[in-house]
Length: 189
Image (cartoon, rainbow, N blue to C red; front, side):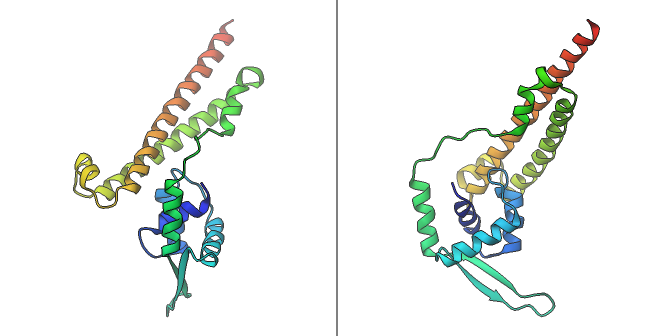
């Protein structure tokens, strides 16, 4: 997947300025695709040049003018082609795992601290994703929304993000506990 597809998918919900897109990305898309605001602005320019999004200028009296972007028919076709193509298997690429792999040879104190920080960050993300899920489904309960909700894609990706963050938090806590216990046993010897 390229950033272009993530941006096009985010724009399916309507017209966004670069700033609004960055906010939408930060809340909903970031659980499966990370991009800095500068990357989003650069990608919007490429997408507009390629005819996949259309931008329009909005004149504002008390603020600087802004550009709003929307997906074009060509952009929608690009997303349809992307959705139809076979997906590559996902993989984990995480520097913390490299640090954990070295823990029994190099030392564990800083690794334990980083695992605990990651677990806390996952807790915060779980809370954020839970709030977003509640906002997306409104008054409907989850099963009702899953069967009849109008815009289910963002909800489903948030469910995946929630599951990922929960498993990640649990793993970090478990590994930190294992490493602490190993330290305690070695200190007693």
